[in-house]
Length: 169
Image (tube, rainbow, N blue to C red; front, side):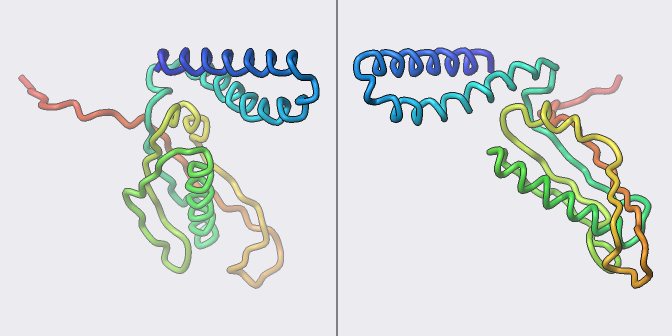
């Protein structure tokens, strides 16, 4: 993992130096050089973010479970909304996801779902999402006016490789 980060940093440094030299040779190419630096800047920001993940499991994959909590049908809807948001976010982030299990709600939404997120720093990024997530809104399922509070629990754990054979003595 560290070797990949170091190689990315070296590549970014080379590309930056090449752009700088090109600009020195031909100042008329300033707009083109500026445009070529935008992706470099984004990748450098990603590299800086990667440096934050120094925990033992941070660089690895994650297992995420979402469970509807207090709030009935609204909580089950909220749990499904969270699942869709996490899956879309992971896809945009370049993480590979796989839904392992879902339990549908009685009327709408889900009671629970479990999925994996695979990719660089998946666990390190997602571990901050642990805990109860609250949604306060006017319920689309209740005709009574007023706001309803819905809760969903998010549990994030590192995805560990199989331990092999375990012998109890």
